[in-house]
Image 1 (tube, rainbow, N blue to C red):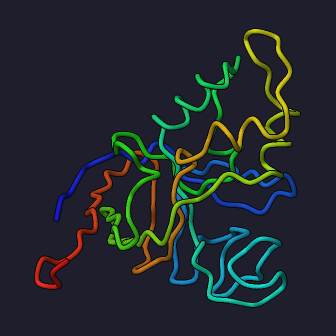
Image 2: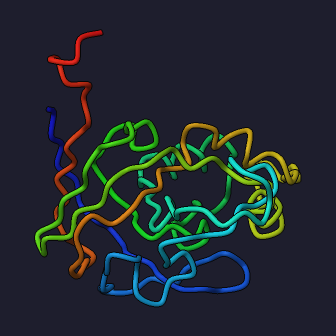
Image 3: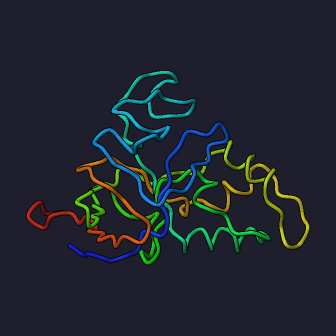
Length: 191
């Protein structure tokens, strides 16, 4: 399996009404999620357009979310934003530098941190319409052209990061090194 090394630039947790998550120097991670975070828990309710019917209680495969500095820069550049998008604004728990194609990491990829925290990637985090409307109301283009509520969703497709579950707890701190072991289909399974 291939392992890449990156840096945890910032760590976020919270439950603001506007979906954003404040930055912290460090955050305690437990098996049910990040301390004080809106997405903490073993279960969650489905939303409209989710895998199951809206309101269905299911396993929480979204205990944490991560974005990359590089992909945020790419989205900001493609949208011609005056100010770059931030992990805080997008409601991500982690912002990582140095992992190419973070949004394309396959399910089963493991992120390991010095404190012993291990996070397991479940899936890509698609951009949502509500986030697009929020960004359209908060950000401006260098060209002065107005941002529509769907511009973010169109631009951030396959650049929005990943979500997953906690394998082992501990403390995450800005500046931590992260070892990313990319899941590969075992050769003994064939195919």
